[in-house]
Length: 363
Ligand SMILES: C[S@@+](CC[C@H](N)C(=O)[O-])C[C@H]1O[C@@H](n2cnc3c(N)ncnc32)[C@H](O)[C@@H]1O
Image (cartoon, rainbow, N blue to C red; front, side):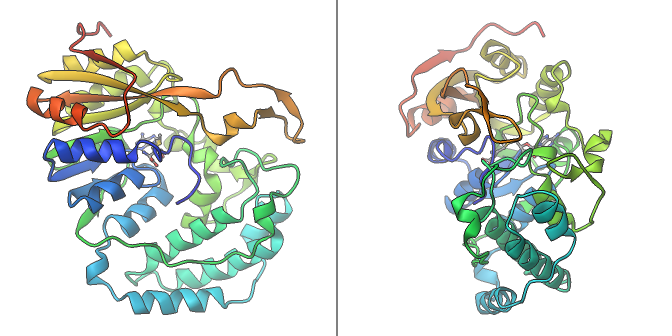
């Protein structure tokens, strides 16, 4: 799975045990990102619908959630990946933009990305199309030269970037599932009623469209004009590619509206203490939405890798230090009292703080 800001790697077992303990048979992962959480829920036998604004997330969801491993020809997939791995490199837009004008991948790997991505385009009508794209994004991520975000690359090539790009067969999961791509503010009304909805929105200024612009371009394959040292897509400046969750003043009302409109018996909401809204506000949004019981569990986790290595300028020089290297991750649980209690009891990691049924918010 790719390196991803806000990925819930450490919390996945907890979130999954909570949904299972609450007896969930259907679930929505509304800001699915890497699809980690959706994958765990699907593996637990839950019918999952995954959604996100990002093009690459749609492709990951089509691969891991909407493709049923028991219904596809895995031999055909293995053969296709072997053929793609054998293609010679061919420099194109990707190599020039991200490996010559910038140093995100070594040019030898950029040339292979160009050749393989062109060949995948010829398979657009095949069931394998999203699976091969996922395999390519994951392969490129394994040889990149970043800290896990694409606003900048490392001054000196990362050791892994010297490795040869190699596609692997994604570990597909058996069983049905669905992808509903798009903006959560619109998608939420079109989704089916489910037992559990998991919400993990951005809570601050970090934009996924710019932080993962290379994966966006690799999936769209549309060679847009690029700007700045990171060669970001020019359309990153378009309003259509901005999320309300990255706007400090608008985000609280958007989240409150989303929670009120979510069609689910139970909500699980991820949140951390770097968010623009307070934990009290979040508890208020959930109470205002009419849930019988609302609880908050807190978990102490390391921060993302970019924070661990400090603040650097574009020449790779350390220009500052981060204020703290751990942060609190919260999971809010809202729903019928018995199910909320079962979910809270199932939290796999020890929660370090809890609060129940706070006063309604005034926002
Ligand atoms: C914190 S990340 C989710 C991480 C995910 N739970 C995981 O473990 O990989 C937030 C996600 O919200 C998506 N996003 C941002 N604004 C959105 C919007 N308005 N509608 C839908 N998704 C959005 C981003 O693309 C990103 O994948």
